[in-house]
Image (cartoon, rainbow over all chains, first blue to last red; front, side, top):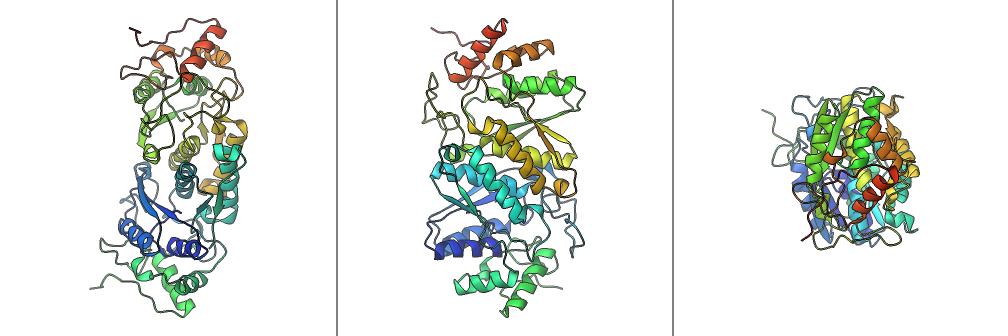
Length: 220
Length: 220
């Protein structure tokens, strides 16, 4: 399981645990400016009963090109049309590739990823057609695939609205206060309340009719 | 361009340079035991006139599962049937993903990779169908692809024998003495002469009717 520490991947983990999967979680340290994510991923993994949690460094921040990894590019307060500057080139391709390597070493049958395409930021690598193409690639790329025991890619939230994701997670006991979605989270994991990720999250809680447990930075 | 410091990727770079491409080279530091590769990649990149060379760390060695990254697994002297223990799970998927990120940041049109499938070790991620599947994935995964300017994956050596690769490289002035193919190369880049990579390389020079410039470790 790819676990970012955000709301979606926490819910995906809860879904996998609820159906009885033995889960191992992988967080990627890619030079993201929202480092509180990594701490959140550790908390969420333990709270939801994953067997193991790993962090792997991959220095895609050094390649630049995204507001999420390059301090010189500002995170916008509101998404416009098209793919925003918070898009990290090839991020989910890289993350799934690393998960594929670990899955093959472990002998795991499935990689779970929390992407979704309804209330989202327009990133191309969150779409179902991307997930299907990666699954096909994984079959061709690996020893497992050649041997006829291909590793599946499961995106259990891909067609759910943010509100539906939150309702499902609350049913399964996810503590969303310990997740971090904000692109500008401070070191304590408190959210800015203004970026696109904060907006989608806040609107999701409102639409789900649930209290928003997010800890926000105090506004002076 | 993905540049490993080996014979194949050096030749692929020479092919791309000969057709007039402006090339930037990427070497991956993935915990491989043959560290001399990384030094060889730097030399080859400069010698063949790449505009820029980068090294990126990605700690797939920490995931284990391969004789190339795990000191506890021996590199066999001769390949048997099937996929050997030197297979690194998902290696080329990870490498192409990272190259894809850099290509998108740079605005590059093509990623060049030196894989080939004739005289090779049987790795699934060296086959043309893998390359085609990655190209399709890249179109779906990136902002570039969504905008109709997909990044191509070019494997110019994929259907060539080792001998044909060597002949082509010699025509183009590749100095194979500065390349390192051996899985057990020492720090000076001298080859063991016994592993599968050494065997394929030596047989290639013989079949090409060319002198083998490889520096071998002295046998006491």
